[in-house]
Image (cartoon, rainbow, N blue to C red; front, side, top):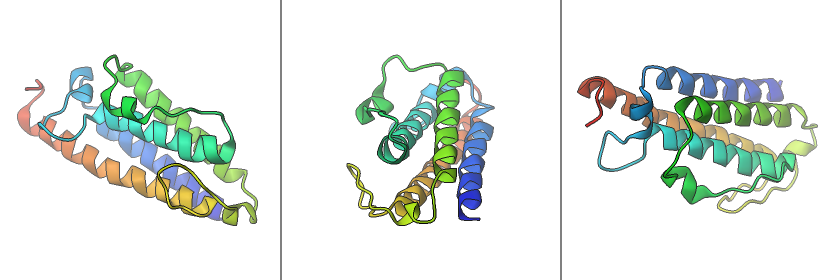
Length: 153
């Protein structure tokens, strides 16, 4: 039951990101509509890196090596399609990892750079909440692009 609820939450989050990204042009996806904050695309890269590090490298032992600063500043980012594909792959890995946990695994000790999570369940919950936080930002980015029209300023 727990694994199903968590895996479904990640699927819903990933689906919502895709829905929000769909109306954006490639230019809008990578350009910031405000002088502060991040572009939609860089938030997608950030979420992919976050999941691949905190769940992939630390729980699933994928060997992923994170370059967090590049998530926000990659001067040659991938296409919108490729960035969304990377998020889709990260979420699939998270879902597989969640489904592989035994009841005892949820309380297994956890440690990772930049987090205070003490158990696997805590980290998986924190990553889901982190996605929700950035989805909120993506909603506002989409509203701003809608408000200003199709051409980034």
